[in-house]
Length: 67
Image (cartoon, rainbow, N blue to C red; front, side):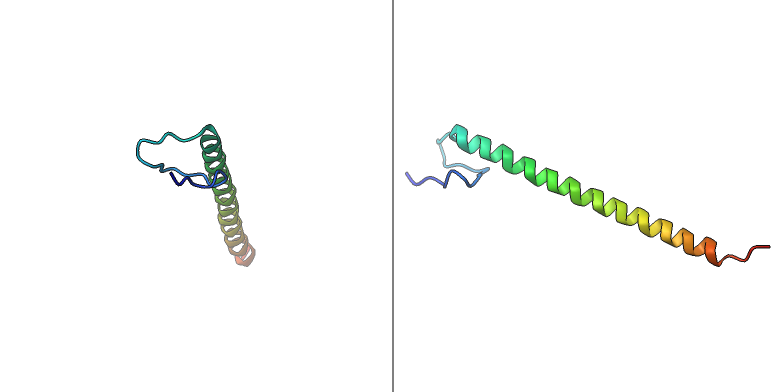
């Protein structure tokens, strides 16, 4: 029976065929890296939103007339 390459993690397997331990390990590593990079990009996105908010407040307070 044709099997996937062991380095390619697969969430779907053939019918009545259990995944090998190598496939299970690769699947968990694949999911870990996906969630890891998503969290990194989410953190960068959050920092950029904070930077935009502070820059808007800075422009508001710097152009405000001091009485």
